[in-house]
Image 1: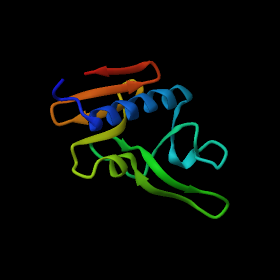
Image 2: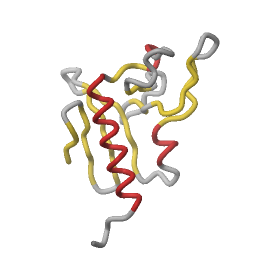
Image 3: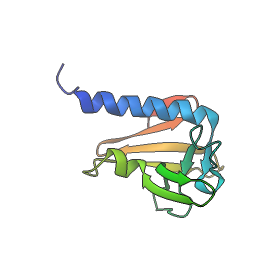
Length: 115
């Protein structure tokens, strides 16, 4: 099977992880606490781009800190092959958009879909 390699498998694993966390909810990073930081997907509401909000990957949340250390894009994607953003449609429905060079995958609490 050509075209499938370990990077493909790792990407699918990450997409499935996002679906599982989306079932718990997606929240702005300002709502991250020490107690909930592992249970939700958090987006950096202070770093909005025209494509949406970056998803927080690395964070420091304790009594003294509340900092975004890295985004999911920075963690998984050193060559800018794709972007992962939290988006809101015109009805304020939230979804995650995984944008590749040749297509888009939308992710929500129900699964992932090729858009």
